[in-house]
Length: 153
Image (tube, rainbow, N blue to C red; front, side, top):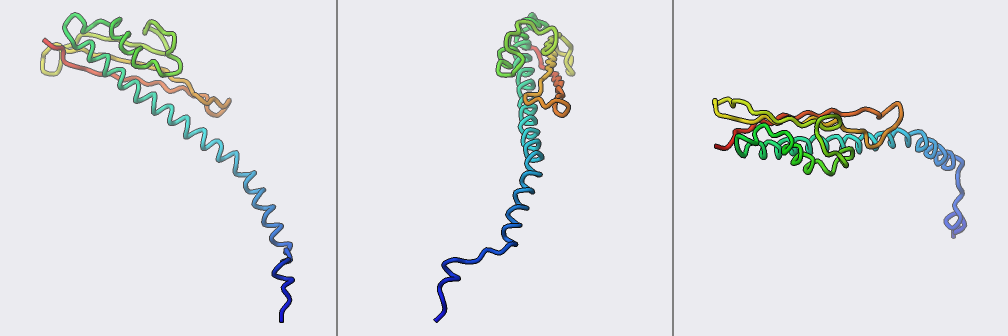
């Protein structure tokens, strides 16, 4: 009958100990790259959110400006609607005017493609990098959206 000793107490070879050490070294060498990849994906998500929010804000501003001919060029009223729409963005808190960076809103009365009165609302937003890494991810994203809408008679 065979001895049960090798099954109860298996001998560890030197090779398995070396492979565990090399796996740890590989993890240590790859972890900074994985961290920067994760940070880049999160920051890109924030930039995409900014793009969508500015597009929606320009649409809301154009809906307000297209109510009648007196509001077609009302930049102040349009600014109020755009600020309410962009309240969740990081550097818009505390703004009360839309005439300088990081947010510029203009509304103007134009003639539409069919010759009827229309309004053109332009929203320019300068975002910030939400996860700043000096020398690597310090860029700003400038988003400008322009919406034209026919003025209701």
